[in-house]
Length: 283
Image (cartoon, rainbow, N blue to C red; front, side, top):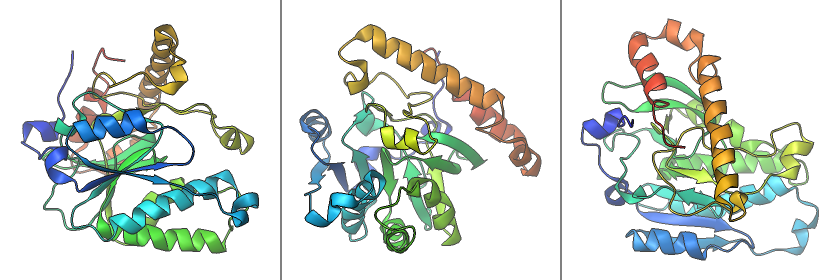
């Protein structure tokens, strides 16, 4: 059983009609398959590949990732349409281009909209089904020109403190930073793709989970993620674990917190959104 996004029912514009450029941020990873997918789907796709510099030698891996996203934000802030930014290990779902935009195109103060979420929390859901909320991880997201401009401010602040050589979970600061700038941040009804990468040792060394996967997907993936190691069984087991974890977060009140329900004028709408997004048999 699959339940459509509330915004789908209200004729939300499709991604292919709403976005400008697709920027794939990468280092040494192959991006051929991902680039081919987006190009064949009709997007204007550009790969931003980081070139190693001598001064990067002592930089933390987290800061190098931030630098890569900064290059994409420089492009996004000069664009006339929102920009889709994805990391090289993102695996989109089939029919990605036809999925709905995750916020109203008439909304003037959009900052960021995650299309892949990690540790998500929903804050509110509008009458037409658009959900504001929190996520960390920058595997796949839509950024507006104003959002990109402010994120470059955040990058400058991180460069000063804690600095390039220190590990920073800068992606977890984005929601709060943009909301301080009076921008609204959005979550998808379900994830538009998967983080296909291998476990991250730097995250684990700093007390975070080594890997993160989509708690629920909008549909089948366009191709097998790297973490599956070309094994369909590995893929099924990892996706099953992610689905169970997502359902557990829902019922433990981590996706939709009790305090948010109590403070909402439309608690039923929030509960319906939170429950219905998990009501699918798809991995």
